[in-house]
Length: 229
Image 1 (cartoon, rainbow, N blue to C red):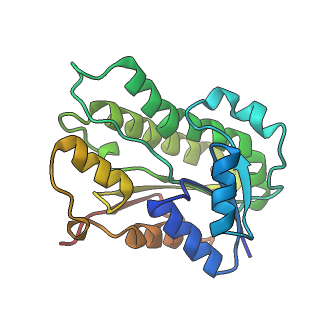
Image 2 (cartoon, helix red, strand yellow):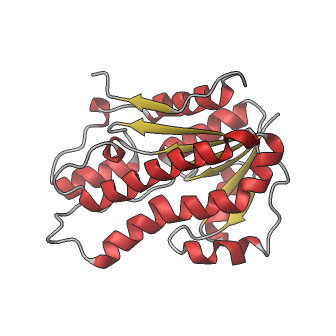
């Protein structure tokens, strides 16, 4: 049985990953932003443990974790949480840039740093659920794509730095996926939302589990997932 820490387990891809790992009898740790959210997720995953930390305030994660127990060994750290705010460069305020950079890039970097001792002990795996926007920036996607380009750089550097410690690193680049975030994107775009047009979150979750389940003689460094319809 492995030990896995997931961000973004409350909905979308993260929830499906948590469901699949729970069904396998794995030990889950779920990162949540506050005690209220921790109580809600414990109702869904009674056997899981929770860690409280606000991804929008990564500078305080070290302090928050100093008051909580952390997993001694960690088989995987799954970065699934994310936020998106569309807008042209001319119209996007600093607050929107900072929010997306904090949650999507700086917090994953800090969370990884804090948990690296546990990952090294287990020769664990770090998975960054990135985005197609981490490979290409389209109009109105500049600030979100910038945060996801940063995650790509983080993953690439971490992979080389931690190879000798046995820590594997995978970036997953999903296209549009039928999640609450995608519904928000369509609202921001002023377009009707039809989840049947897009990737099911179960498909992306399968890609994540494929990466962490791969035998130790190999490493999946990148997975690109695109809508098949």
